[in-house]
Image 1: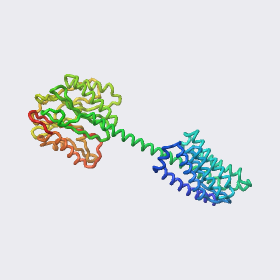
Image 2 (image 1 turned 45 degrees about the horizontal axis):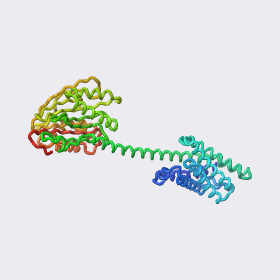
Image 3 (image 1 turned 90 degrees about the horizontal axis):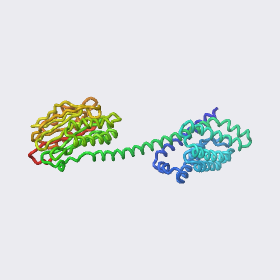
Image 4 (image 1 turned 180 degrees about the horizontal axis):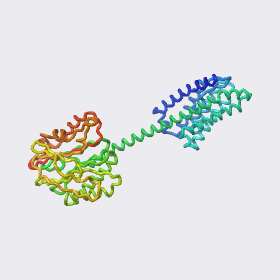
Length: 455
């Protein structure tokens, strides 16, 4: 009983060291490099030597029992065979076995045969039945079978039989248990590391693709600057800041004809890639409908029907759009469930009071009402998504409508870009370092019929 306790204690201590080394090695770039070259001769050689070193360490740290060295030597050849194939297993088994032979003792020859055979058999198992190794209990059974085989070889080779039997009887329980649990645990560590590496590569791939998607998404939005719309009557500026790599907000500005320009802002339900794809589709549909239909209300109704037809994910989009006549400042606009814009007039800021229509994509057969406003010289419209008013400084404190109006009060003389910069600075100062979960998009339209616009 004392011997059994000592065998367990010493073998588990050695196994702990081997598992620690294996876990560390598995996380290094060196091992990742060789794993990436699996089935190459470099991988086979590396795995065989790696397993052989484990086997040799098992020999050195083993316990002598009447000429038999009781150790976790077999874990090295088993490991090499299971991950590197027959050649790796045989190489590791031979290395560990030859080292054991130099130590001498009653079971030296039997151990050379056993470790080499075990390494080869584990390699054949991994080659012909690779899926067997994906379950912990299956690897455990393989480990038990290999250690039973090892003890069987000892009984066959070591003479006299009574001596061999006495050794086997004393070591069987700790020898089989520790080695089987050891190889099962080690394979579990390796599979875990491989999964983590695969997840890491997948995350890097997704990150790269999202960065590309973000660039593509921003390229879909018009570049609003002095060059566009290129009319002295009007200045338009916009900004979009996605909460994730890609978002569902968007804005647009385009000429309907020579003297009328349409501009809009929209917010798609949801976040991330699905919202970005829905955004791209909705933007195209809206632009085509506004250009093709004689009335803005009819364009919204048609866009709603088209979006509903292909809306398998039950997403929707809120939109505010206006068509401005550059000859006289007459603005026709429609809102589909979107936040009311802020009118900046004579130093005052106030929300446009209109009856909101239903969101696009929410229900078929919806009709939309047109509203009309005539802009005076110096007027500006500030459009935004709810990511602005719902920017959070804490769990229950939002930027809100009152702060937005206070921020915009008195900035009617500023150019369009300055208005956006003012709101962005106010929101940033409010939320500080708190993470935001909604996209933040803004658009400002400044009407100056008789002035050359510089900003």
